[in-house]
Image (cartoon, rainbow, N blue to C red):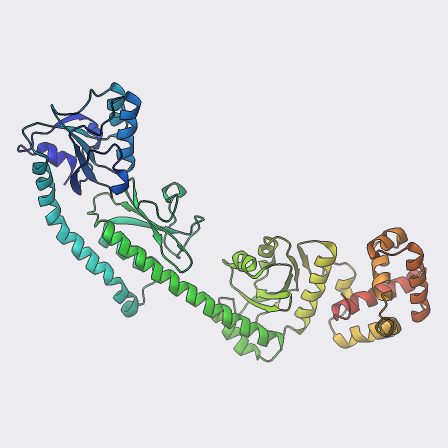
Length: 480
């Protein structure tokens, strides 16, 4: 039933005072209220009937009264003639015309119950349609089990049954389920316990443990028969089940990903098995991957940054190891304070032995320089080092072996001091400040280093050899 249907009823003898543009509004109920603000108890699409006791006398308050009703989704305001309605101001009628809010006059001879009965008779016929829609929405669970529907297809069916266009989003306005569009942020309720009625439909929280997972917004579709709030609530329950299933699947995949990455780092998976697992976890089995080491980022921050990207993640100590497609490193610059090292691309499912050393080396460089992201090979010297661990070990032993042994035996910092001095372009004052030592102390350490290695650091050849040996030691994880 619409407001126009009520106006056409000869038994009711209603007269339209204002708001002609809104006579096509649907009517779900008719109710008497003498409150100046009945909106907290309304669901929308009601005809509010009043003798005028609750209608304010001042122009501004009359306008506000009408606007409150319209904002709550009231279909029309019916005023009893010749009773307690105060003189209506021009501002009241202007607001009704501007909003298309029908204002009706009820003759004194027509009791309010006659209007209520007229609406109830129409609603009774519509109730059968609503009940059928509710039963079919319940059947959505059977569809999920029997037909293995994807989320987009499931909600398209629910839209056809309910007579609403359905939207879903997280509390921040991001997509909640794949294939279901996101509503305008203006349509979202201000709080999870806000009234469900919004202009043109309903907005409901999608329940989840710990608080709403998001919101469902349903707008009446033009030309359709909307099935009402109860059906929209059932759709929100279906959405909650879908969210729970998606979260469970993500958690399962996350655990499988961590186990797979642990096995890849141990080199215990053959390439064919590794590629099958990567494909199941959403990574291209025939493409390239990179290994990343992330430091200084919390688990939750990393998961949010990587939420839209297929990846494997494993935590070891204070480091997070992440395997993903080339270019994934850019997403890891979002978490505040994170320092990420990225290996060179390598074949999906291939050995991670070299990639792990590269990622650790790049993460060391990121932490030392304060840069959020470092790719292996950014360093113009270190990228020329060979990949072979035996060759790197031989270089370190030949050049730095005596110093490493001395530092371990005496708990000294000769190697760190020389590296800091070299990284600061041999500026002794700057290096001493970074090490928190006196310049004379640093000078002594440089002389001691030269004596142990047999290499004069004022020589260009010796300097280059020591610098390469330091990069090799870092790549091997022998010092940070």
